[in-house]
Image (cartoon, rainbow, N blue to C red; front, side):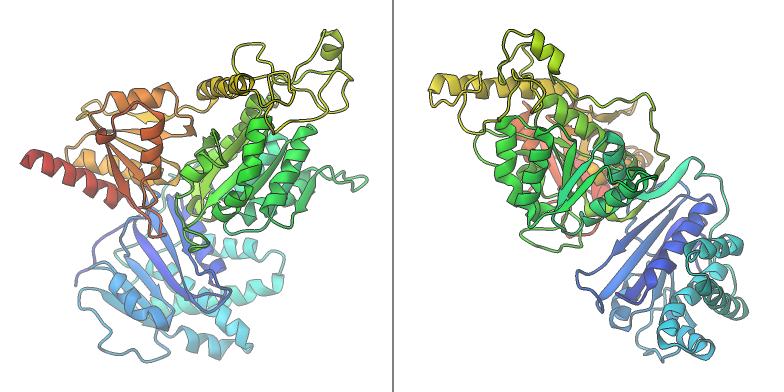
Length: 604
């Protein structure tokens, strides 16, 4: 079958066995394309066990800058015999499959509509390298070499990346370069190179970086001034704390004395972790804890305590597939409702929804400011796709004039000048009381109260006094709606009066879908929610669109439910577009949903 010309617009999928060291090779491939100036994204689909099960790495090359999954596979590198049949099936018509031809392949396992290329990767590496482990590792670099030839990648860029990747292990550089040469030479001598599917250099990645969301989140915590991190390890959030600790060792360790000016505590469980955070924030530190769905459940009671006692805290929830322990290495957006109303009683929490690593950085900083300003927990809702995969995004920027917003904290001089201080008194009418830090002045507060209290902080079970406090907390919620990041709204001049709402890592798929729909003559507006409470702009978007598609990655339409509960939008105006299999959402799902609704409308 003739190969389709797909210059700078294709997907490479690499099927490996978990634990065979393929991560370095796959990451190197993606970075090489990025350095050639072509937009790219990489997604790692890996099992939750340590070694042995199938793993896939998917690289999307898109000169148009589309970063979501495309649903296509144009080049498959099938290195796992156990998944060969599935991998063969997944290749799009007109695509190419590359396999290790050291071992015979069943003639029945073939397809006439794709090109199948055999490269004797194991045989070449067995003949060249002595160590059994080296032979396994170098097979990965050998297929990199074959792809350099077949996709017309810049060899000098690849070789430079090898030098950088193994800079701390110089002895590995030579072996990796030799393996790349083996694959490259075989492909050049055996096949017509390059393929019609190939990379041509561009200049479309200037000002961009490659980074994962968890690293960007950790950096945001550092820049926000966080000095205390407490956590219990849980996939996929553990790398947030790993990166935070690494940044702190670099930036918060006195170079002269070696004194550490930060505190990282691995607690015995998530309940203890959030307790440590609340103790630290009460004492005036900026503190946070990263976790995932099961950890958030354990933290719920303390989150309710912090809401009612009015203690700032930041929780980073990197969502994964549930329910319960679910599939811990797959992605989902299924903690929305549990995060919004964590704990019991009349409790609501501020949520922030980053959509790309740059926003992970920016909203992490905003989370600490909001937590202090509002004196309440703020939950940053990321997910595994955003947190653990490599994303291309704009360079991170920082305003050196930034100063943390610590909110209404009275210092010693202000307390000395005050006639009296009452912890839960709403002086300004915005629902936010003043607070003090322990030990600052005798007039200040030395305790917090999570049990029933009145506006003076005195214990009470009086109905009127209790209701006065919870009504003030509702006023504070109204203030929060004005302070949180506003949505990003994209309107089309030819709008059909239909809109799409989404949040977080669904954004790239929706952006691509909106463009694809416009190419078909269907014009929809788009509102990307960045925070809960939703605020007036979200309300306005819902009011002005006769039909709104809510795109989200869970089974039960949790974002739609939250919109129904917390806005005046009629329920029948909202239509859920759901994706919840554990893989990142693709644009095709959104396009099909809108087209189907349009066809039904025309038919009616």
